[in-house]
Image (cartoon, rainbow, N blue to C red; front, side, top):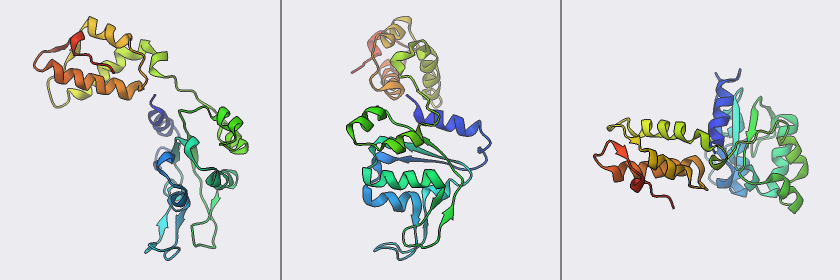
Length: 212
């Protein structure tokens, strides 16, 4: 749905735009890596820690930290995230000193966090701390009126290094009839496939639209 694009837009329109925007995919963070990646570590804090490492929170100082797929965080590390959000202070792994960081946190997920709270897999207190100002980004199937403009933008990008192609009326109709479970990313792949199948033709026809 473009969650990171929305987060970047919020950052660029804010007073923090001169400072870093750091994106973190929570689904890719194992429980053992969470503290080191987000809070950093001191040299010698554990085997393999050959130098000091500043965590993502420190790297985003003054700017924005985007936590994508926050619902994937293990419960054991949710409490550590909550503590940082409450006080804005962190300790690198292996460090006794506390570092204060000024960071705006934007969290995103494609899951129903309220249901995760009910199921007991997401902390209620962390949910309320993150949901101070919720924004719902609608899926592509909920905003099909945007599809022609999105398709035109994506085709312009695909035509940056080659002759730009347009969509036939029937091709656009085929796109509008698809449910788009993969959202805008899926649309981009379908259009790229259409550009390839259209070969030297200036227009992508309905038969070049292959949706799975």
